[in-house]
Image 1 (tube, rainbow, N blue to C red):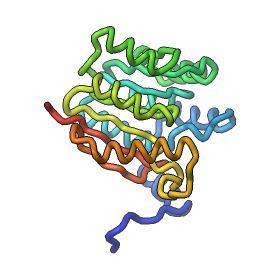
Image 2: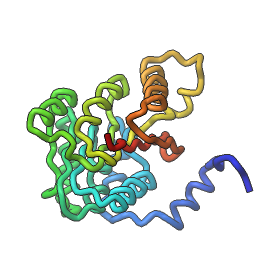
Image 3: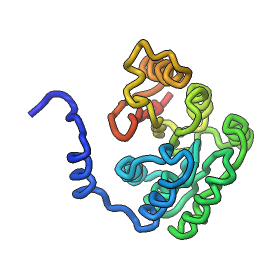
Length: 221
């Protein structure tokens, strides 16, 4: 027994996957294809995807927003969990997102996903102009770390009361706990974590899944 979170080594992690991961064949194939691409470390872990899909099912989410599409694993796993509804996903990489579109079609969820290419801040402001405020049930933020705080404020505007935001990479391979680490992304994530902790508009929980996730729930006003 322990009163702290277990330390996960490869042996335990592989066991965890062997008895819990139920991954669609198209998702597994997408992970394999992405593993040989530049930036493959940006793809989320499969157990993280399954965890996010579970939240989508638990809250009955029908309208989702994602910032950072890459090759489309997170949007596809959430679309498969949702069955019907809409996911709007934002990215500025036309090459990686072509891979995403191929696999969304293979996974038979392409009709649920609206990809918008461009700068995410511009796309978020456009969504507000299009009267999407307070309409999203679930938002996943996994993009450039320097803009996380900017994305957050716009996403809070777009989120339903009681809606969920998930931030990825909030532990940043442990760098956020190293106060000697003054790199740009580490400082941005450390500042985000402190800001969220002190934000009275939300409830939150940070968990050591993948590279660290913070789950935010928007309180009712």
